[in-house]
Length: 412
Image 1: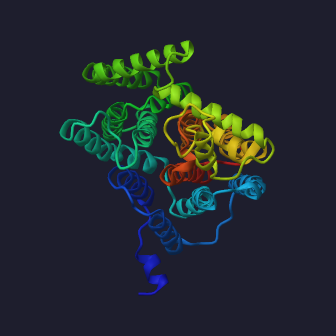
Image 2: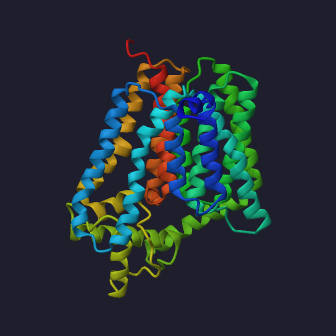
Image 3: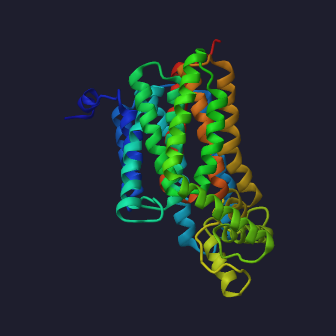
């Protein structure tokens, strides 16, 4: 069977549903699934679907800014000491260039916003299966999936917020059931991860979704919010002890940090990592100490007794301070522009120019929410050091952009 026959046999109608569901499911279950397999799969599907289409101005600018960001970090390579770590981090950052490929693939497949919503809601089954097995069968203190609780919680939170968006805009009964069910499973999974950074992203993301989603039918909106509130209250009732314990621990950690009594807490260790990152940046403020060199420089500081950190961490647990330390002010500006500022301004522009409830409007709301929650995740976790989260970010952004491109009327 040749390429032409393969393309004819390949039905792309539910491509987004499958990829969004499969990506999150594999990320929740398996450790050690090579990123190269995903890249080959994506490029293979793109080959089957390839078709000459005109890329919209926004995706061209987005792709250009990603390339500019990569160019901004080039000078830092002059100062790299640990090339093994540098090349490893570079390989992960380069995954961002998959965003235009995802976009092209989803645009050709005529992706609809409901496909993203359905795929993420179905992923709640996978998240809940992993979380309940780890916590209630294996007896783990937190659900962490194959990587760690922060990554697991971050993906579960994002899917829960996507389900909330669907619930607020659902037109049919089956959509409300799927959205509510998927949202509950994702939310419980996020709670069981005990990741406070993910919970912080949940709060910011929920505010964005509730502020920007304004269904014309006030009765449906009220009903959706009331149902969502009852579900959240029911979830909190069953896991309240876990939530209260983690919040109380955060408060205690903060008191110990302020008083200087102990730094051997989660918050105290993060404070020391951030402080160390700033010290590294001050030694080379323009271009940084070198991409991927944070762990190497931290090991050097620990050997000289210049830090109170007792554990050698691989990164600073903050994408902004990590970028500042390793790529300098130039790299930080490039990162903020490409991953936060431009996406937000672009989606906000589309949001203002589209009617509430339309696919283009929902795509812009989801784009704003995803950008905001990943910006918040970056405050406590260096998600740009994890291949799965980088690809997840690119995947979700591409779906939102392709939905907008297919439904936005530029003559309006």
